[in-house]
Image (cartoon, rainbow, N blue to C red; front, top):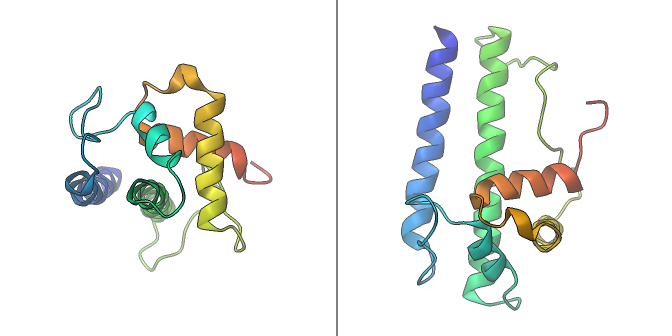
Amino acid sequence: MKAIGTVTIAGAVIAGLAALIVPALPAGAQKSPISGFISGNKLLELCGSPFGTDNQAWCDGYIIGVADALTLTEAVSAVAASGATSGETDPAIQRYYCLGANVTLGQTSLAVLNYLKAHPERLDMIASQLVIAALAEAFPCSGQ
């Protein structure tokens, strides 16, 4: 029963973040294979834009949003799995990626851009999936 509540909370958080992100997309960015989501092709276009442009800023915001949503989802799942009520988490919960304290937004954006360029066969996928895959490849967790 607790897991169902966790899934509902995590789903609501992700849906809320998506609702905030989608209306703020640059012109034309809302076209995608699934309504309300953008593809890797569009993310590559945005992230490949010159530094300081609106498209590049949107790319950075998208990456932060995906990373924050996944971090929150992992935290909620970890608390639920441990049965804790005071915020303790189960260290056995597997993380998708681990960003060190010194990792910058520029590094994460470059990792995503490089991943998108290296995997053109995946560009029709939902962009959030590709962001997670890129961060997992560039910033793996040791010991998992």
